[in-house]
Image (cartoon, rainbow, N blue to C red; front, side):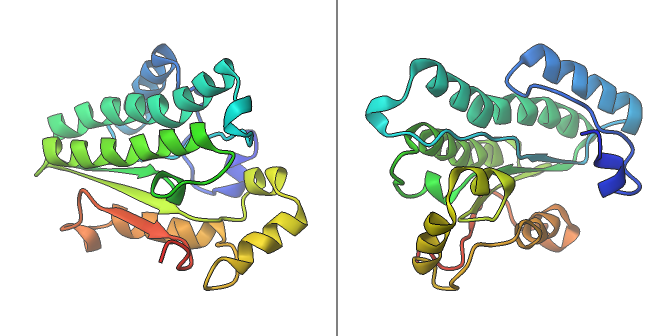
Length: 202
């Protein structure tokens, strides 16, 4: 957060918030109201993962992954949606994952949370139409710091062999889809679950 203004010129502000804490989320949105006068687009993107076999997942790790990856999305989406409904317009985009579409070993908690995000997005799209559009983006393998921290170079290379395009996505390639879905170019897209995975799930 400290370098946000350097990385993103023109940024109004960067706010620190634990998305799994309702009171912190409420305070953050109140500050956004002060700074921006409302919310037009929300990207619910906060997420964590802990790579561990199912039989070894600890209770506190399960709760934390679900709290951040699913409850955090719910809390932010609900607060944003209330403002958007009052303003008669807005877009909510959620970062799900191909892990929410197919089983992946060693990520049972993460997979369950991302599957929940997909159904949350679809349900919200039904309830909030026609004023608010809601979509879920499902990235596959993306070369992020979180991915590099969990995977060795050998594991990354092995994953690339399973991807028809032969490589991980860059964060910018995924961001391009979010930019499209947030724009007026996608005004007829809601309730969608869109994979960005180099053909892996095909």
